Length: 439
Image (tube, rainbow, N blue to C red):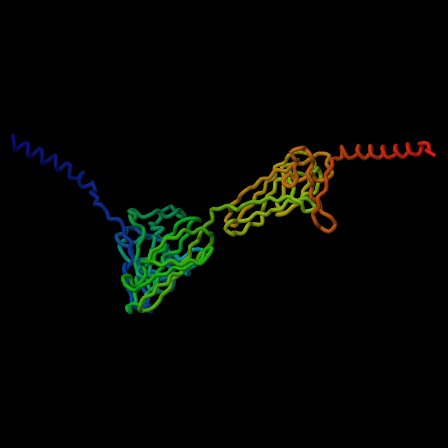
């Protein structure tokens, strides 16, 4: 019985052999890796160039690639365009590279160099394994404790499948977990002389406290080494310490000089702090009549002059555009403008101005326009009724241009008074003429 059972099990196992052979037991495939070789470079002779190989390993079915290269232009220069490596040595390819940014721009806060490189096969095909994609050649511009070169792969693609001409090449699979590679470069002089390092340019909002850090200065642990930061915002400032903090109130690009001194010599470094204004301008409305008097009460159809006397508290320039709204449906974009009100009423005048930081602000002012008034009513700030109801003197200008006081009598009282006076004088004269002579 046992013998028959063994025979049956053997037959069953043999029947399943083809099935098990058809199953593919895949092993976990490692993802590609990117690197810069060497990854660490230390030099003492700045005349020597640095050559880095941008490499890939454990890649499957690579047809095309592209990458961005970045570095700090304060310390390094890419002395020629990237050139192709040996990864596609057995194939015809198209390799392209360019250097987009090579120099620092303090005014824009830019110290990052940028270059690109890409390569693709001319014919359908794919390459697997490991190799060098590109060669990068740099030179050191000045001493530095540590600066980084980064190559970021922006595309790693395999070939289109047959019949998919013109379609976008799909990404390789598996794709690298880390899509960038870095290398650090240091250049430290051996004579002990200082090399000032003020850090990077910064862009901050107004009223922000900024940390100025000289901890990367070479050498780093010298007892007699001093640090002096000098700059000018609204006045000259001097700060003395390796790491300092300062709150910048005045907007603009502020160059900051770090001076480092020890027994071996002196070194300076300059960075820029771009302070972005968050303070709007101050709009100011000034209204005058044709004689130069400040008014807030006017007559219908009276000529008025509206002056834009706005300013910026931090001396930023005001852009040429301003906007007046006179409250009667009329507007203007002139800085100073004349205007008449056609109907009596109370009008709210508004003025909107903008500074060079693209911040705007609006001011308003109320003006009262009277009906049937031919002369300018007394200015409320200069003329007012007394406690007993009598009119106070209104300031006028004589022919010599000097101010004098005149009594302002309303016409409704003045005209009847003149009529009564003339009638009284005429009547008295007539009575005296008719009166009999006493002799």
